[in-house]
Image (cartoon, rainbow, N blue to C red):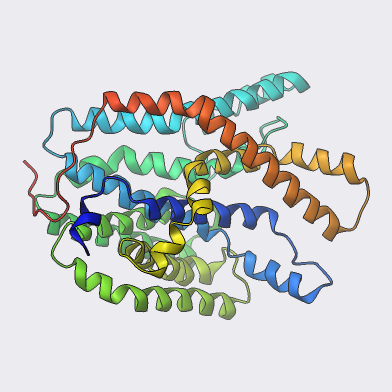
Length: 381
């Protein structure tokens, strides 16, 4: 690891990873193909069933970035105020704009009262809670919020994570705490799928997914310590083994969907794979160069908008396809939907980022985060 990269405030390759994550999620939702008569398309569709792990990459990357920011800011004046102010400016404006869009859509179609009776669930970031999942699906509006579960996981995690991390008195203790959180989440899922009557209801629960964020946090702390060179050396092998484990679990289960095997074996494997992949992006090499591709970094820059809008306007994209094509084969309809959704989502996300999100992001400068050299061993004051 060269000292120049370690002192960089912004690492371009991480934008590319974010772009890869949102691309995986988009193709997962719009790829289709499992019922095609064309063998190659059908094979792609079966593999694409595992595209849900794009959210896992988001979680690992988010845990890495946010935990690093927190660790560097502990002991600084108003660290918690600045952290939450910056998170609020990044997440809340676009998030609650979408809530308003859903309410406006319900009012337009005459179902406002019914929508208002259910909109409190996503408004309070509770849509990932067991027994509340179906409420979001039943909001009577022409726009969908079912994919917002991952935002609920992140906001719940970062409501408590800073204070749990702050009580760790050394970087080593904090790293161990991150690993224990990963193991706790792993064990929680195993117990669920062994004893819970409906374990799939907990797939998006905080305890089920906290490990993905925590392992990213562990990597951020390791990047600031003396063991980083060893982690870099092991990263290629760990990436391959994690991916192989995920593929093997999918083949054993006969599906890459979120089934029992994937949630108990496949998910930890792909989480470890993505953690090692992130480590590879931190050093010069082919992985970093691929992640720094201009188009991937562009997707990463507007990834929040892409994630939010690509399913929010699903109904509208389908309406456009039906108006343009009428009745066509499933394969033609899916291909057209993919194109319309891609063009529409990228356009809206770019406009949203530049003309709606940016003014709020500029306000983050009022809540600065002091940068501390990553390789300096620290204790919390």
